[in-house]
Amino acid sequence: MGSGIAQLVATAGHRVRLLDSRAGAVDQAITDIGLALSQGVDKGKLDATAAQAAQARLLAASRLDELSDCGLVIEAIVEDLTAKQRLFSDLEALVSAECLFATNTSSISVTAIGAALRSPQRLAGLHFFNPAPRMALVEVISGLATDPGLADTLRATALAWGKTPVTARSTPGFIVNRVARPYYGEALRLLDEGAGDAATLDAIFREAGGFRMGPFELMDLIGLDVNLAVSTSVWRAFHHDPRYAPSLIQQELVAAGYLGRKSGRGFHRYGDNVAPASANTLPLQPALPSPALVFAEGPLAESLRDRLQARGLPFQHAGTSPDGRVAEAGGAVLYLTDGRTATERAARKGVSNTVLVDLALDYGKATRLAIATAEQCSPAAAGAAAGLLQTAGFAVSRLADVAGLAVMRTVCMLANEAADAVHQSVCDAAAVDQAMLLGTHYPLGPLAWAEQIGLRKVRRVLANLAASYGEDRYRVSPLLARKVFSRTNFHA
Image (cartoon, rainbow, N blue to C red; front, side):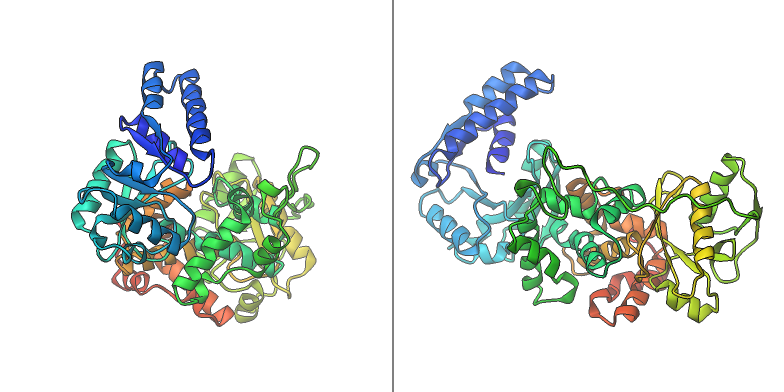
């Protein structure tokens, strides 16, 4: 991360002194940056003269006092509060009073780091995302003592470097590492409950949810040890709030040394002779004996009608459903998940052959859907429901009957966490959506996604999850509740 930041700053026209406590690390970093700059020239992304000038601006330092003439010091050392405090205290005794301090911490309190300084107002967070030269987002974090002018200066500096800065208050995880926790946490809970295997869940999140990577392959890429450390840090900082509780499954994998791609094994296996695991997909079901009945409301029903019609397949149009059902086929009744299990909904509605369908980002473009069936549902009805979706062009993965299925519960939890960040004045709604789009490449900002689903529906899913599990983990954000009751959105 440090070398990436140095490359970015040098390319932007600044002289950069690099210092590392590890022998040979600085020389290796300068060599690696040179190779990266050369690759940029080869790909036509950087002028050769500009690359040479950037390389010339990189200066190796071997002692801390060689940084005494710097105007901005960016720290990117180990994620340890004591180590960061000690470094900044030592720097404070060397540099001028005008020198600005920035920490690239991803989860440690900027306020706590600054508490060790005589002048804590000179420290702010400047959190880059890896790889720093390519990732657009920078979080500018103000601690309690941070001078507002410093945050403004760092924001303007990040803009001048071609980055997109978002400002936030120093709270655990800041924006991205806090709001992203449910993407990992809910997937891990689904795995723990036996809802599906990692490969199947990853496929559902990619092919229905529109995420670039499923949660398990993403954790493998990040490193399970790194991901667990961040989750644990946020959980502890929030006084063990169950919303952020780390996973025992992930903890066991880390204890075994299964750290993901870097160790050759995590949730998935990696290697030259290792075939990637495939998702569990239901086999094609027999043709329906009679046309399905498709009701008139909601994106899923609209997509079903459009897909069946495009394939020249018969179906019956129906009006508005009396109970929210999407379709009927071969005795099965299909509903969109609302945070309850299929078994509970079947019992409460008196519809034994209840089949629930998961959320998709865009049902018109999705290639896979997840379903769950009630325990009361007959095998024939379950097969008919899957067959209807298959004839409409979806691969179908059947999950165990867990509340909220996969994509719906996760997106609602992401939106709820984003709403709480806004509610607690960490950032505004525009900043949280922008941060998650740029920092994690989610297909939509979580609050914009919640508005697309419908805030009332999101609140209902969360309330049903809370009732199903009996846990405070799924409590509804007060701000989300207010938006529902006031019939307003997060974005004007």
